[in-house]
Length: 214
Length: 288
Image (tube, one colour):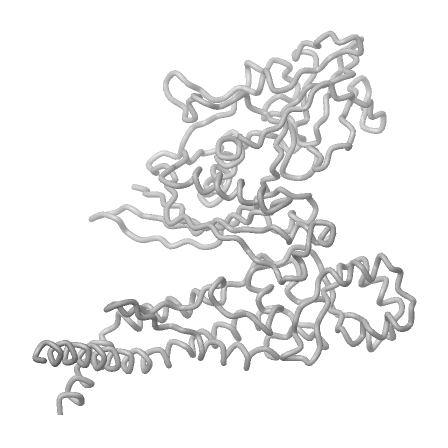
């Protein structure tokens, strides 16, 4: 029986310690997370966005912010807790493929064609079959944010489509065409590292210990 | 030439001639066509046709300008003054199959042409080695060339001290963007690049006498000089600076949105984007 109590005591201490450290890390991460959002807005706002673009990073800012909030910064394996920031491969890009393409880069010039407008063009029956086949090759699932999917159309086909559209409805260029990739995580990850390694952590640990011990 | 450009050009040479040398291909008995439009006076131009895909003439490829560099000293010493232009990578023949002496023509390695002003010499066929992988130094160029391609992107640098007194440790971040024709080829290239960088280093050249090829595609210094043995590519290294050491090498594939990966026939027009990867690493140099 004594052994069981000891084991339980150890488990209890481990659990408390984990909660205690997690509590501190969450406080620190709140500051770190805001850096990712700032980097997102700063870096992507340097790109010239056409007026009617459906890939405007500000349209996807709320979704990005919520995904940063949900990102599992803290991981626990056995008795080890670790903190790591998002990477291009680990971050959940669902719902925001235009931003993913901005981050990984895209070769070539493309134009945006909303699925709703594509359906209208198909109903008119004026697009050659080989052009519709090319359009269908490159669809981005953006319905969560802008309410419709987005096709990225190569320049040559886009110019052909534009001849069939009125001046206020012409396809606009995909703003992240022909870019080699915009790094939106390094700044946040550097900041996160410096926060974790800073004296602030020691200070927080001390103050929390005092609070827990009373 | 400043340090950044020296590093960029040295890395370019190392990747193209050493690391990716497994991807040098050979074509034999390819017909040469006389190009009248490019002919000036007695100087006649012959070129290969564009029936290969990718074509050796596309940007970042071209004919191979050095012989096999295995076991070659790649740094100038008291007994070594540089690397000679190739002597066995390209053979030019007459219509009857007789090999033409390389004293009778020069090669434009970029546009894959044979140029001669010798009366009575009519190049008709050529055996040549060419770079299958396009190596480029700017992202913007990749859309004009078919895959496979590697784009070198030196993007940021940090300089710190490394000893008491003067001395600079320079850390340059580099990304290699890899574009394959299919997943297997992309993976092969990435593995080759990773192995070619891991625990390796390359010399940092001064390029005081210029890069390997002139702007007209001829071997540097060959214009007006028909004797290959008299012109060597100078491999003098930058004094007081270490070799370029490669560290923190990481490679990863880039996944495109699902609709782009439905099969090769479906991604023909966007195929340059379909099978991509990056290899990132730091270039470390120490200077006194």
